[in-house]
Amino acid sequence: MTNESMDEVYRPQYHFSAQTGWINDPNGLVFYKGRYHLFFQHNPFGTQWGNMTWGHAVSADLLHWRQLENALLPDKLGTMFSGSAVVDWNNTSGLQSGPETAIVVLYTAAGGTSEESKGQPFTQCLAYSTDAGDTLTKYEGNPVLPHVAKENRDPKVAWFAPGGYWVMALYLDGNTYALYSSSDLKAWEHLHNIEMQGCSECPDFFEAPIEGDEGERRWVLTAANGKYLVGRFDGRLFVPETVEPVQVDFGANYYAVQTYSDIPDGPASRRDGRRIQIAWMAGGAYPGMGFNQQMSFPCEMKLMRTVAGLRLTRQPVAEITTLYSTTRAWGDLLLTQPIVLSQHDLLDLTIECDVHPDAEVVLDIRGERLTFSAAQGALTCLGKTAPLAPVSGHVTLRVLVDRASIEVFGNGGLISMTSCFTPAPSASQTVLLGSGAKVTSLVVHELNTAWD
Ligand code: FRU
Image (cartoon, rainbow, N blue to C red; front, side, top):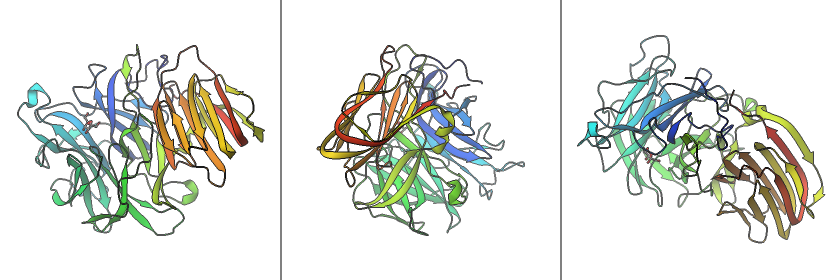
C-alpha cells in the first residue's frame, strides 16, 4: 500500500492517521533494522470503532509513514485488541526460521466481540514475524495465556536483562493490572497484581535511567491514560515509590500510550537508547473526512529528579527538525501588542519568557486560545487546564500545531497537553499576545508536510 493523497482539510500532516477508516491504540511499537513499526487498532471497514484489526505502518524517522497491509485479522478466538511487540534476539521462542531475528507480538483476542468468536473469552495470543516485521503469522498454539479475569487485555512485554527472561504487564479489570514472567514468550507465570487508582487498560512497563544520575535506573508502569508509577523491580516484585499515579499530560486527547521496544542503546551524544512514546489522540472530530482519529506526535520520555520526586518528561522527538522550512526568531520583546507569528498551518514554536506574578501569555492559534496565567500557575487550552508554575520567574512553552491538533509542552516537558482541534479553514493566523511578560526568546518554525 502506498500513501494516497493526504491533503484533506483536517488531515494531519506530520501525525500518523490511516488512509481510510477508524484507528485507536498504537500497538506493537518496535524498532528493528532501521524501521519503526507502528501497528494500530484499525477498523478497515468504517470510520467508527469496530472489526478490530491490526493496521500497520513503518517509518525510518517517525515522521514519514508508509502504510502496509493489515497485519492481524479477526479470527475464531476474537477480534484483534491491543498488544505489544519485542525482538526475540536470543530466539527464546524458537520461532526464528531464517536469517531474520523473530519479532514476537503478544495481543488480545477479544472473544465474543464478533459473530465468529461467540462464546469465547478474552485471551492473550502470540504472533511472530520472520521477515523483519513485514508480515505477522499467528502462533498455532494460541492462546498462550488463557482467560484470567473479565475482559483482561493489552499485554505489554519487556526483557528483564538481569534474569534473562521476559515480563508482561496485563490489564485485568477495574483498576487492577498483573505482571507475568516467561522464558520463551509462550508459557507465562503470574508474578503479582498491582492496583492503579483511577487507571485502566493498556499498561506499559519499562526501565529508564534517571537523567544526570549515572547508573541509577527505575521501572515505570503506565496506564492507558498515561498516568504512571515509578518504582523498583527485582524481576518478581514491582514496588512503587510514587504514592499514587502521576499525571503528565492534561490535554483532552491523550490515551492508550505505548513506548517503543528495542530502540538500540547508544552513546548519549547520539541521544540513542531513547524511550519514545506514542498516544492515541482519543476523541477529536474530523468532519467530512474518510479517516477518523490520529496518533500523537512521538515523544521522548525521560525520568528526572524534581522537588516533587521522580517524574517523567515528554518532549517531541528531535527528528521533527528535518521538517522545518521557514524559521523566524525574536528576542527581548515586551508583550504589549499582538505579534503575528505565522499564517502557516504546521508549526513548531517555542516561547521563553520572564513573567511578573500577574502576567499572562496568550497564543491565538487559528482562533483557539492557549493561555498561560502566572497568577493561577496554569496553562489552559481547548477547555482543559494544566498546572504550570514559573521557575525563578521564567516559563517555557513549546507548541506543535498540525491541521487538527495542538500539543503543548511546558517547562521542558514536565507537563504536556495533547489536544485535537478543528479550526475554521478561513482562520489561518497564529498570534502572540499577553501582558506582564518579557519574551526572552521566541522561535517559530514552519513545517513541511511529511506526506510525500
Ligand atoms: C483502549 C482499548 C483497549 C483495547 C482496545 C480495543 O483504547 O479499549 O483496552 O484493547 O482499545 O480497540
